[in-house]
Image: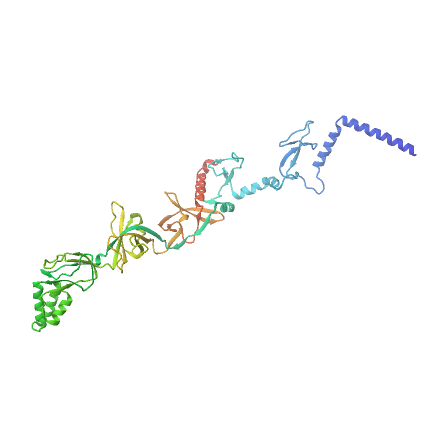
Length: 477
């Protein structure tokens, strides 16, 4: 074929194709053909590319136009929208893939955790549902599985929440509980160191010592001279016996003089000199302060008359008033520190010697006696004192920090750390409460790990779990 012939054939084909295309466009055959081709391309897997998987995310226009639907739909020409699966749309991230795979993993997870009993409010409100639902903020209710918790009151907290709430733990241990009981007291004389001076027979006093109430007197110093006819007679018999004329009656005469109250040094003087003095000296039996003087020169003293009262103040008592509720923690031998307002800067150390066996009706307190050395005599009777007593049992007991105990008034609770974020409330019986720790008599043993900080939050969560557990039967379908 020559060149003019080839040109003519080419022009004829161009005209024919152009006219056919115009006719097909007017008859909407292009869109139908394009749609069929697109559907064929989508439905036919491309070599090397896996078939679409996962849940249907949405439906798109069959011609690829920006038209989408969340449910199946048809286009204007009656053709259905094309389903787009989770694996097909590249705009979905790993979350979409997880959603696509969720229906397949859900049966296995549910089988592992057990049967779903109910759904609880995600914000911890006392609201449950038999079926899945959302709260007012669009949050999904949380499923509660059968057997998820062995104890309805047990609390499980995630690691992040533990850090945010500040939950801290400690170990219960054997320790001596110590605390200080602060009470008022009054300085008093030691009753055992008070002496009463009196005669055992009728006597006449003479030459009374120049001491008055409040004066200090030393042991052996003369208090007064006295004459007694009965004593003089017994002394004469004793002196005569010491001459050898009476022999065996010496011991009896000496005993009689002693029973009449004659001092031993006077008896020894009669035995040495074998002479009876016209009057005898009565000396002070101890060092001390003259509390009372009734003796006067020339007076006749009847048996039993109080002539002098002398107190040794080298050791004093402090009588403290301890409230009734603190008596259980006070023990004999406990250490006590005493301060007196009239002696600032000084602290006296003593020990608890006696708990008086009665409670004052008006004040509901019991008197406790504390013995304190007073070698320099600065403590005086009836001084007001501030007393601090070391209270608590001396033997080691199971002790926990004071902050570990949640006291509701009706019960006392300690939370045990079970590990993996699980905390179990434990009712306990308490003993002595110290300044830093509390005795636990029942419910906790030494070595248990307990919560000492933010446990009130765990208590609130535990109470919520118990309330939800009580509604489980009602919530079951």
